[in-house]
Length: 350
Ligand code: SAM
Ligand code: FES
Image 1 (spheres, rainbow, N blue to C red):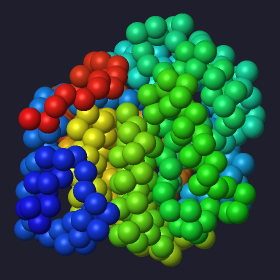
Image 2: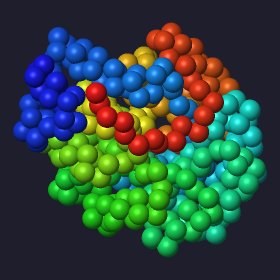
Image 3: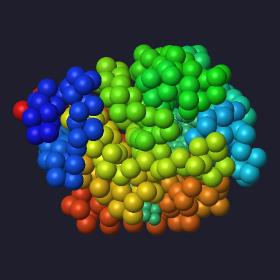
Image 4: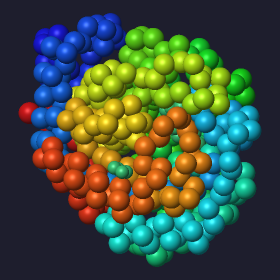
């Protein structure tokens, strides 16, 4: 394992068969060396600084029916909500006073929010908080829509590719959704100058080690500014209710591998990671992540944005999460900073 890890550290890439060998053979004994290498790269590029993004889950209506997702349109038990523009701006106001300088507007694909409405929201947030970055995470749109949002001031876009293998994509989604369209969106987002984030769920149903190697190689080729990965966590009202949750160790291995492949990428320790283990986010940081994304949504709606079961932080106010995370990070020697946390291009590894 050590030779493979050293090779990855030096060359920032491995062959597919080597990635599979690494993923399949890492153990409790060999993984700490990987974590240590990844952490050394993060520390060299970012020091002990952790960036925060304030997540505003502004609608749980969705026209899609992804098999894994708790807010899929077929879930009749989901209690649907939408935040008004005023509510969203008040989340930002609260967030700004808590030191957030990035706001992430995330939601289901909700046709109620027309391009006009989204552009107006982005424009209004940027006008009120010109020193903040706005990230959108609202799914697949036309290039024209992406251009409008960008012109309105959106800086970044998160769109996980979910899996780079078309057959696997077909097992996670209904036939009207395709990997080809997801890829089209990602290319266009990057072309429009968004800082672009992609990613996938770890241990999603039917995922093989080879699929994960394909994900890693796709990400290396696409060279995104951000990569969000977290364990798959089942939701009781979805077709995947009986599949097991993703493994903590597997997720941590993948965070470290991604860090070694993309030394300057922004990698969050996700809420899903914090859901499968009480110290999942701390472990994610110690495996090479450098971003956390606490929730800024009003407490009244948090439980309703239930992508998976037992999601953490659904009862806490934004300020509680902000200070909880600050303490958690301090305990492991890291500091949350008041900063937009923009992507900065690579320095040489050595
Ligand atoms: N609608 C937008 C989109 O599709 O990109 C943004 C919202 S979507 C709910 C955000 C992400 O949640 C998805 O990309 C997916 O990877 C993740 N997600 C959904 N269901 C999940 C589950 N059961 N376990 C873990 N992650 C999940
Ligand atoms: Fe929400 Fe700890 S981050 S309570």
